[in-house]
Amino acid sequence: MDTVSVFLLGALQGVLEWLPVSSSGQSVLILTRLLHVDPQAALEWAFYLHAGTLLAVLIKFKDDIRMMLLAPGEARSGSTLRFVVVGTLTTAVVGTPVFLLLHESFGSFNGEVVTGLVGLFLVVTGLVIYRGRRLPQGLRDVQSARLSDMVFLGVIQGIAVVPGISRSGTTVAAFLSRGFRQDEALRMSFIMSAPAVFGLLGLEFIKSGFSVVSFQVAATGVLAAFVFGYLTLDVLLGLAHKIRFDVFCIVFGSFAVLLSVLPYF
Image (cartoon, rainbow, N blue to C red):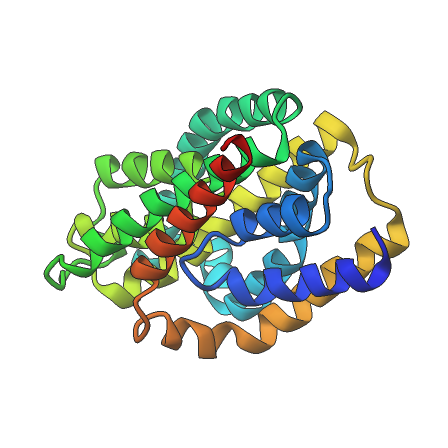
């Protein structure tokens, strides 16, 4: 792909990462349907661009991360660290086989099949978010977390490696379903994302070595994702509470499924 296309994809990743619409799913749809990129390469690009928004998360939540690592004896920091460690280990156990299955299957799919699958998973994301919106506001914070909470969130995050399933949308909904406050759900969702994305990028490098990218073009996409992600995080997190993204995911996902079956009629 050319540098301009990669820059625009990076910018899109930076904006959509904070919204419950699956940034990787949107990237795969654009790459396969509009840019006619091979599904396997599209999956690799979608994963790779997360490096930029990962850097934005590390900077935005640097105080939480620093306290978690440097002051584990403090009650809140220690509870956060335990949650992240257990949740990340569970994510690795669940997410690694899902990641490997994706790589094996995407290589045999054509663009229509990928579009249909991503659309279907977007509909699932929309239904999960819809359910989360109807849950009563909880009162729990991370210090009240139980082992079952940590494992449950790790499982959800592991499944969310699938393009079309929004990691932020499903994990926040999962936190809310366990009775956590909304602000705590958002904070923990993004802190948990950092080691998960590190692991995803590591698996991608081991699996393919980012064979579809050149350093200059890749750096352009990652830089765009970081800049746009860092600048829009606060605004878009606020926007996420005011717009019905559950409806967006269901409608857009249904349209993608319809688009995928049209060539067969």
